[in-house]
Length: 267
Image 1 (cartoon, rainbow, N blue to C red):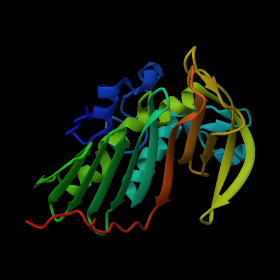
Image 2 (cartoon, rainbow, N blue to C red; image 1 turned 90 degrees about the horizontal axis):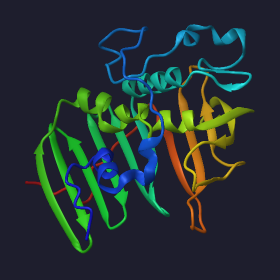
Image 3 (cartoon, rainbow, N blue to C red; image 1 turned 45 degrees about the horizontal axis):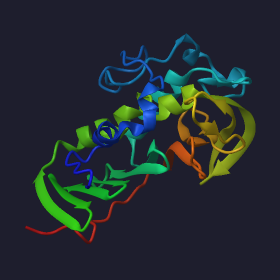
């Protein structure tokens, strides 16, 4: 039997499959941030703590981090959400669902084109949602059955800035949970697509009693503004012979193009 998820959101997947116990991970609070304007920082954003206002130039580390590692998770989540809301982006998330099953979600969203492409891949089910010109086109596949539909889309600014994936960065199964569950230490810098990133190695993680965390892999990459471009905790579930990964990645930030998928049916 397929998942039969018609809501096309990762939240629906997590509710249907239990997210492999990830709901037990601590999320960030949902109070309004003390910096920025209300319109720029919706109530779903976490509140950076007082340390988030410190000048990173004094320490050489991004805000929310220091020489000991990751210091202020809400500040990092807030900076990441704010950066995504302000420009084009391509993001990806992986959420273990129990055993070695994993759901993956990708989004490509272009402010210039006002186009948005959402893709969810879970065991026995895939969902696609393409938005352009005020219309949302949907494709859902479960087993051998594929269905198509279309409907009026929400305003594009709302879709781009406050979709389910952006909001859930502050949840236990999102970026906040990844950063709070792990213990990270500075591990030098790297350059990706011309952007300098601070690396933080994963030393340990507090997930579940039956999970074996794979240290030496995973970790986090943060730019100078505190935007998290990658965060991952790989682990081996009890009784499994392969690792799964709870992860979030910004694949592109700025200048993203979204092409119409071949499956979109004109009506």
